[in-house]
Image (tube, rainbow, N blue to C red):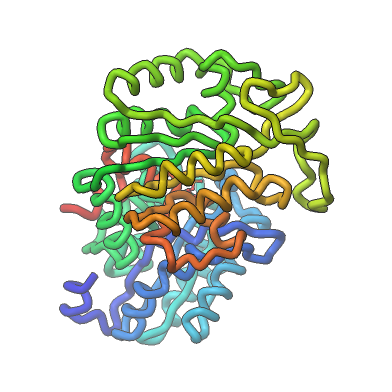
Length: 400
Ligand code: 3PG
């Protein structure tokens, strides 16, 4: 983007593919991290006199307009953060978008409606995606890719559109890639990885890759119960991916052969049912050892002994990557595990990276100062796929 700015962008229509896929409670944004993350790029372009067209997806609408997934709240928040009026087009490539873009003065910013209201955005068929990219290309003269959270998607606005316009990477993508490089090629030892979240199957690729890079892998969250089952424990009614138990057993064997330490919960916080996250009423949690989870209880957080153990495994690390909460952090009865891992990152002198929407949101929701961490990635799936060593369509499209 610096080269683009040096060339001069006054009067140019610059399409910024952002990731404004923020969590919403109705029309209230509950975490605006992703909007704040794209402000430097949008501001630099606007300050340089460009007519900035910001585009993004939000959620997973079914290829048609759906008010529940409107980008209007995100556009309003972007305006607040920029301290400027931001125009909003109520469609993506239709009359409203064309008129809104045509009405922009130099230095003004517009947001167009959710890209996924059009089936062409996510189409598997190249021609269908290409046709939508052609329509998007009519709105702009130049493309800036800055939606890091979506670069793993082969979607029209991420992959096909940059091929149709002169293009550059924005500041956010440059920062994210710079940080993730440090975790792949240049990670300093001891390298500790903390993985949580619901599903083991989402993390298999990254675990596979990390077996050659990491020194220790700490497991928490819903996925921990498939690991405990793989070690022969009964897990009651906890989340369990039965079909992954053998795969996990294979990983545990391979890790041992490679000298990578897998650290699993030694105790867990359980309850009879999943807590009500709306009311956040007090529940009746119990703490049991990992070997003694009752048949009618589910694990919802790592226990106090595990927290101590994990803190000790993070204390002397030189590099830490953390993706995925340790428990149901949205409910105060099950937030301690996630809080203690966040604290463990802060207490160590390691280079720390928090990856993924949920862990990033957890850090902010639990009241931590996000600036205290080395880096909080805006990409969940994108950062995991990067660490898996995959080619990411949205980065490949910007590289030539
Ligand atoms: C994310 O939230 O990880 C990105 O915005 C991508 O969203 P998606 O998983 O719906 O493609």
